[in-house]
Image 1 (cartoon, rainbow, N blue to C red):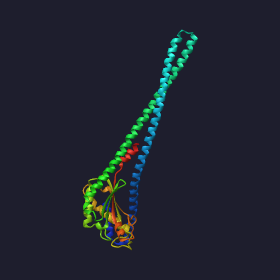
Image 2 (cartoon, helix red, strand yellow; image 1 turned 120 degrees about the vertical axis):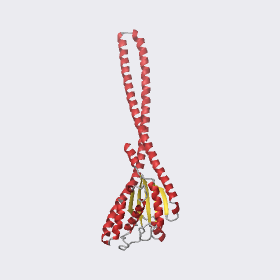
Image 3 (tube, rainbow, N blue to C red; image 1 turned 45 degrees about the horizontal axis):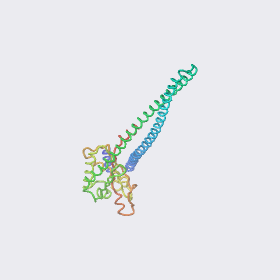
Image 4 (cartoon, rainbow, N blue to C red; image 1 turned 60 degrees about the horizontal axis):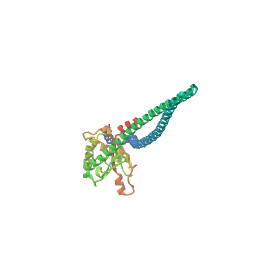
Length: 320
């Protein structure tokens, strides 16, 4: 789908400027959708962290309930032992009073029956509390197991992203100092390429050196098909006055540049096009001030944001 969009953009760019506003509107809408998707991914990470904290709170409450029930169990057990001792005493009294009158014997027998009934009630209460304690203990163990699985899964995702960052650093080492940087933060890997490595001024055609860097990046991504990749185009705040070389605005230029990167990436065997998303952000997400030439140069860039898929994490969360 992204390949078709790129081809359509090239065809439209070669036509007269009467359709440029429509193209701009479509790209603007697509960007809004992509921005929403990117925000959702960030929200998912925050939701995972919140869910983890919630699970830890539940675990703490279950542990407190377990301790409370253990105390009640010990109390009932003490009462049971005391009742058993009383029964033995009464049984001894019963033997001693056997020689007394029928009236006294009947009184003792009545007390004995009452004590036996109380003892039976205590035994039932103790059994019920034991069942309840076992149930809570089972739930506690199950939730603790799921929480451990969730923590391990999140940790494995984080480890995988750290390893990916190291792999990318090795693969793209030849381009260090040429406007390429790689960073790992918030569970994602960010690859930033300045325009001096990729494009000429006002162009969205990737140069020879830039193509080499993107091809090397594509080789690594092809070996990691379970990743979502967002390619963002960024510009400085220099304005375009009308259509210049088929470009309507900074947003238009940034989108064309992002699409050019996608078109190179999908040439790599093993790349899943469904995992790629191209977006233009124009001049609206600068990383430095546009008041200096150096700042503008830094803002003219391609940001490639690599995110792990969270399907397994969602499944575990739904089981809690």
